[in-house]
Length: 230
Image (cartoon, rainbow, N blue to C red; front, side, top):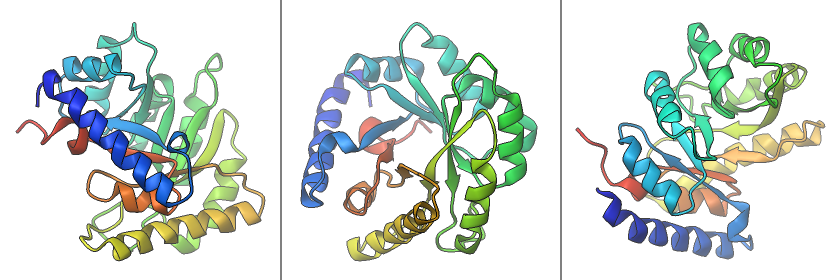
């Protein structure tokens, strides 16, 4: 997809988000659209920023750093949404505003220690492996409470909420069931005093179901930009 197709794609996505939010009795403004730019050129992200998008997600560190540099004159918020390797935490802590896939205390401790003192606290979501899939990262649901408590005590970190990548489902009821599981885990953490306000859940194939179950950030790539370049 080129920049010329982006306005229509963005308009359709925003309309779908608004309908899903309304169906759940929520305002469209309660959901942040995170544009996932993995494998897309910086020019396309610049075109998206021209259309009013402010939040951009990257899964690969080097690619993300290059785009942050290319678009540094724009006032954008960068989210690292890929698997966080402990030997790459420093550039993540230095360059991104959000990290969505923390699933180990060691990684959170490194991000905390390496966040620059002059920067605001690093916004963090804990990734939960809601279906126990061996192919995906994430903490087990039974271990969420302990990790929330530990990460919540770290300096330079603002623990914001939970994130998941559930199994791909075509049935909306099944999609909603996975997202409801994550929301329930957040409710449990908040009942214990965690104060979490973010549910990062929902991608191009299931974001409407996620919004109906309480998503506050949806991570969209293909729905905005089309298929990734080969």
